[in-house]
Length: 192
Image (tube, rainbow, N blue to C red):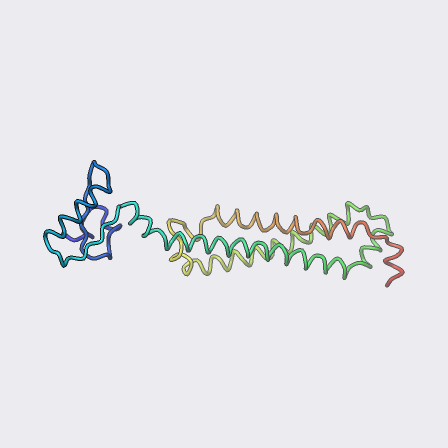
């Protein structure tokens, strides 16, 4: 019987001929006895004795590293997205200084200006999320081979990611919106 035919053979598959020993005693004692018996059978036999939990950890090391790597890249992508949204909104507010100054001079309250900036941030974020979802759905076959027991088209995951990005856009727009609402309209209109 090969290791692939044995129950649990997926753990030992690809390591050559394997013998699985189950014992009620201390694993270190059983391991040393097993080595002695294997040497008695054939002194030239190269036997590697590992415990099942160690073999399982070795098997999971690659996928665990990939998961940590992808998580790190995802966090980096979120930070870059947040920084990019903040930078774009700050630049838009600077470009629209005169318009915002006119709105404030005509009676717009600071809350109205803040809502305007945040609303535009949400509209931009929703557009980006729609494009991103289309890209994620189109590339789901490529991503499927990298995921373990996760559907790349999982609606809950896609919705949570979209909600997180919109929330980041709102958070990134708060500071530029505050700055826009606190500017002096007279000075802004004179500067232009």
